[in-house]
Length: 157
Image (cartoon, rainbow, N blue to C red; front, side, top):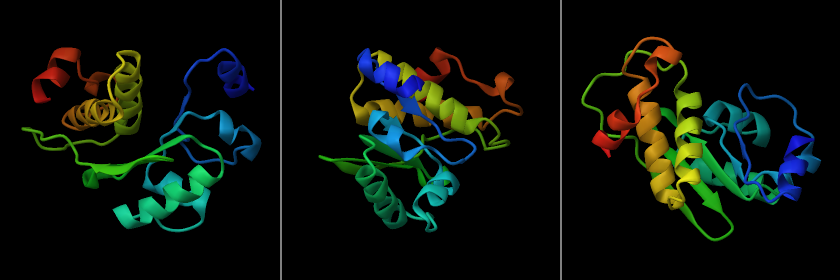
């Protein structure tokens, strides 16, 4: 499996389980960052994830499965992060334009997160960058056409 190969090469892995599907639990220890939304997190932990408290319980279960870092995106409620040493909630980006289409927001979040990781941003800054990327994508119709450019992201940060 690619996660094991990446791990053996020292490559950080981000798994966005969209759409939720069965995952061989033996690969969980090879996942550095697991980024489900609330629906996907619910699938993996067997209980609803609608709030930060729910996300905290879900993240704890996912960490117990061997995943190193969990980021549960909660739509307009922001994101919840947990690892063995730290937990926190991160608000959504402050947008000046209204939300018109959430299609592709999860992909935008993960793309922004990956960019931030490659730039060695702290986890809090990486999640803020990812949230800004996702938030901006919701202010335009479509998926590929709604992806923001770097200047747009930097402007709202």
